[in-house]
Image (cartoon, rainbow, N blue to C red; front, top):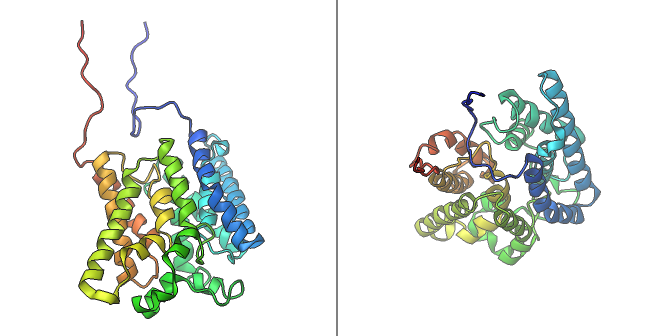
Length: 319
């Protein structure tokens, strides 16, 4: 007779039957409209950055697994998704070496050194992005990235940071929503990002709690600043639609490994990301603090899972 084995694994423990590949490619599918729109806006430069980011992440994933003598799992789609997300948050003018360095840091430093998929405490894509942003700030500057592509274009958050809310009259909220703004390759159209996020929620690939609470956090804090400072601060709608808010709320803050799994933990995590996003935009040296806000909240995920933990196992009568 076989003895029962005690299995120790990371939460969540309730398996829905979906494999890793189907989940990862579900995210890729949700990002396809945004990706195609980015290529439409910025042409072959955008296609080059995205393609190079995906290939680099897949190659570094395979090499790192060989180095650490682990099974090769590049077909599960996680490296493809990492590369796609990294490419979408980079400017289209990013040189090839910058993309490769970002992919290297994303996979090796952000993911594999912690044990690989599911073990990383920080969002691996944002670890790669942060390394580039801190090390090569000028290369990652959105406004400078578009000097040769669109000389007259202005990054809304740069305008807010440099000139204040009084200069935002030149931007239409509708234009920000549909994608008539410069930014990272995949950060222009909030409409397409919102559609992709709703697709993920409808498919059950992410919970609504993190993105909704994220947007609520952004709206609440920006409203408080607006009420306290009058016209000196931008309103909540601008902060929700400008910059990286949408891609951060639906596709980066919802990363499985680096976000809480408990219901209340998700809500608090999302609120924290949203509130920090606005605080960093107002008080930090960066025009957009979305990605740094998510990384800071990643440090709290394991603590947030201890907030009102609730078992999903119901007692069963034994006869």
